[in-house]
Length: 376
Image (cartoon, rainbow, N blue to C red; front, side, top):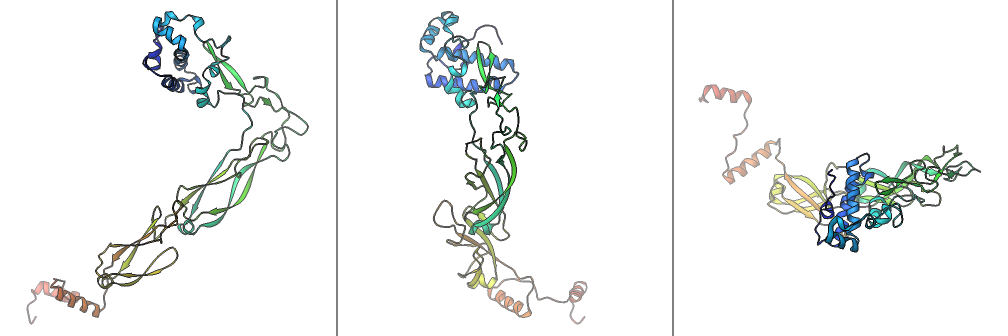
């Protein structure tokens, strides 16, 4: 980087007319990009971060900004710049707490008691189970608070000692140029305490893994991607804190007959030529079993009929979806002699050209070579 001091507005890529809110937004973007915690070991990023922080410290202060706008850098002495080591702010998080609270959870203060983490369990269900709802039994691995130490991690009768690295604060101060940053203490993990005599049953973890069996109510109308939370069935928290949740994520298997489009079910049903031409009653499949349906005359192959309320139950609306039946007119592969006669009569009525009546294989070959001469 150049040793020449750059324009503060140029550093933050803003104009002199920028509002306080937009200025804060511009600095937040730079801080998110160049913060040392996000760029470990990158000295150039740390220098950019320091530069942006200095620019924001000046431009966010009305008096300093007025001096800078009138006289530039010459109008600002060292006493006019924020000192993060003496007086004023203890560290950069105190100066820009509202910005860094959003980025780093409050600036890296001592970690308090934590609630339990949530668990995710993915469950496959059949389409019929998604349609009717179902009761399922699952077994999941999860942690339970150790019944020996009650989650304290220490052996009965012993107490943890204050962490010597952070002196019980849970954070350490890291020098970054002319200011300091708070970082979670790695020695104690931000707890401020060290377990000197760990519980033998849980090896000082405060938790033990078990296998938990739970009854699950699958809601009617479930779909792939639906998530259902079971409160308090996740991981245990620190002593006195609530458990996390167990999140069930459903995946509905494909069905051999029905295709699903949100709450609509689609099925293909074969019908004969006569049913397509004349209409009549057929049996239509539903997830409740077959139901009668009367076809109107003159249907074409792949015509569709809609049957209201026979689709999937809806978790978003009161009424269920519809069933769409696609009608496929099937051509018979084999026919009786009588069926063939009837089709030929129909063809004559329609004046349609059709293949001649079937003959034996050898009769056909003979005609090809003899030209079909009579008397031979």
